[in-house]
Length: 194
Image 1 (cartoon, helix red, strand yellow):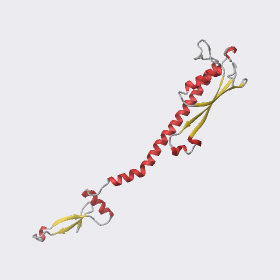
Image 2 (cartoon, rainbow, N blue to C red):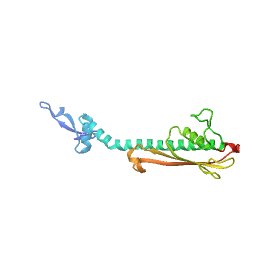
Image 3 (cartoon, rainbow, N blue to C red):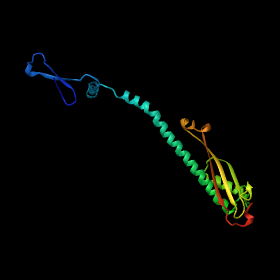
Image 4 (cartoon, rainbow, N blue to C red):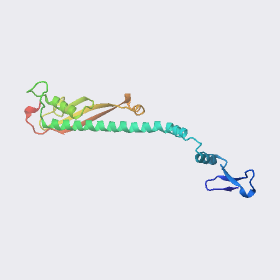
């Protein structure tokens, strides 16, 4: 018996009516797992679709968990950056002492605090913001301060996470963050304080 390159053994087989010089060789798989695998691959008799499906069923939950987790955390960081940007934009507006026109009463203006809140909500592009606090050193809570005063804006924002396994790590499946900024008011006319 001899072996060829792929590990199959050649067994001489003498057909009836043939002499020993006319021996025909047939290939049989080697014994053991490797031989059976080689035989099934060479003959095409083995089915690999069941094996592929089993591997997919083992790997798919982990794969989808990772994909949705990356998506959830990317969304979380995006919303946090949007709210941080909105707070910075509202802080810049607060430092100018300007007032926005009242959309409900043409010709009138919103109060300074309401103008700052409207600027913040407009810059947040629909993100859920709550607990907006505006305070100043001299005026205290609810005051945007006068010229040269320091105004502080603070916003709480909540984001409901979509991936259930990631949401388990946060209270009520919601990520809560606070964004705060402080600006020194410009020397605007004192009449713009309210």
